[in-house]
Image 1 (cartoon, rainbow, N blue to C red):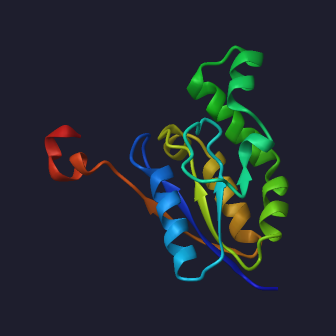
Image 2: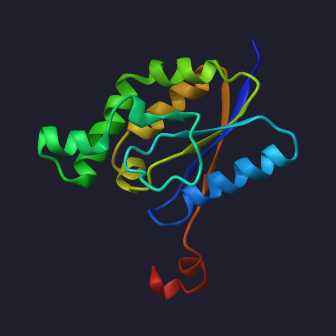
Amino acid sequence: MSIIFGQLVIGPPGSGKTTYCSAMSKFLESIGRKVAVINIDPANENMEYTPTVDISELIQHEEVMTHFGLGPNGALIYCMEFLETNVQWLIAKILNLKDYYIIFDCPGQVELYTHHKSMSQIAEKLNQNVMRLCSVHLVDSHHCSDPGKN
């Protein structure tokens, strides 16, 4: 069984994750690589790419907000817990992309990485299923150039 390689693109909201995913996929395609961008951010409304797999096929952020009366962050946590519970759906989609380099456009809410286990559990499950992933963490350059803004 061949190993599938990819990136988890993480960082705070507005740091450029979606823009990076779009640009990186175009670059990889330009050098002859097969690439698939997978959107696992249910609140991502401004994709600059056409996702190969989109979490909205499984669950929709707006519907969760309406149905459960949750705010944006609560609905996002619910969606990520739902993806974690149904991670086999995602794994099955990825296993159909054996010849592709995978780029995951991840949600930006920091709570999902610092106070919640769903994202780490999803990444762990992906690594257990013939994937080797690295993380690309984007930050706003203002926070790097001016420490007083932290």
